[in-house]
Length: 245
Image 1 (cartoon, rainbow, N blue to C red):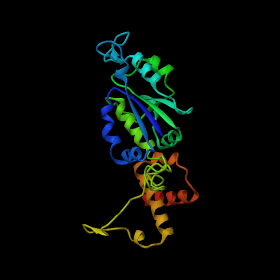
Image 2 (image 1 turned 90 degrees about the vertical axis):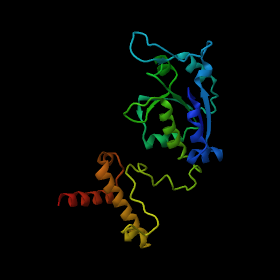
Image 3 (image 1 turned 30 degrees about the horizontal axis):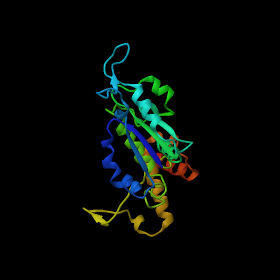
Image 4 (image 1 turned 135 degrees about the vertical axis):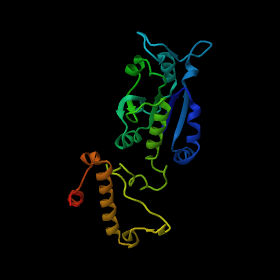
């Protein structure tokens, strides 16, 4: 997967590209990140990339020229490449979108700053707008890092274990079940006996029940979109009846 990231602060990405999951993906050659400094494409002695908004108002707007020229400099190596603007106005970023984007060979991310980008960039140059949440960030680089990490870990070989990302929260629309490791007893609390039983079917049922229980308690709205089986519905009914007792 290749990423071309347009930003005013490329140095913000360097630590993440050298450590952890992203670092391993880069080292293995599975993740190729090209950082493009938008300021390099600004004109004039001072390389100005923002200006006051027409019509008045607070804040500054990113000028269209530097962004357009930076985009024109990007080599399109994939016919299915997408230009994505990180913006609060975009489509909410979810795990299903992460999978969708992981199947695209090239993503071109535009990280906005200040009060946003000139509308002519948004309407003429952008294929997709993405929001990482209903809150305000000081820059699009943080949103770009979220997208970069979430998508890259889905690329085969980046995580190492082929099933590692299949059991994460949100993969099937539910929150993940509780996890335990050694020691068996910690400060008087023991690992649930079923996890020590060696009975794979009992373990599977316990994990599924706990996943459904945790989702029902913490994020019940997720159940409306989750692909639930008849077994899941039976477990949920039991959980709800138990809560009513």
